[in-house]
Length: 65
Image 1 (cartoon, one colour):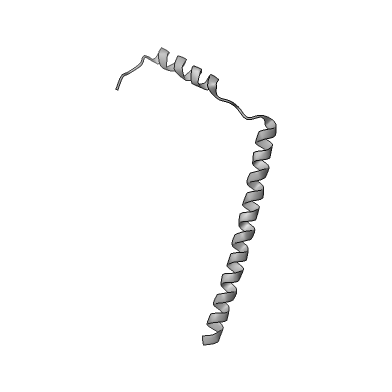
Image 2: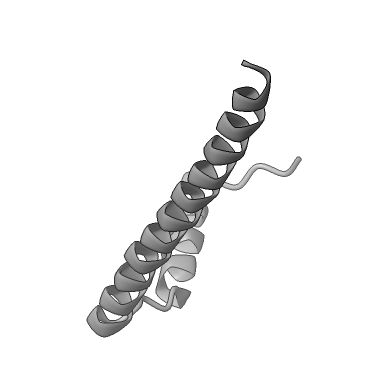
């Protein structure tokens, strides 16, 4: 593995950071809102699945108990 000197490393790192495309404030807000919406939809989905499974198990166990 070739070693580069620290000065070269810093120059290369700065060049790479300069290539980064930072998101706009609007993009960050929209992405954040989408994450919250999808998290809420996922929570609702799993709550409904949990209620269905619990009801089914209660029905099955009620027949034998």
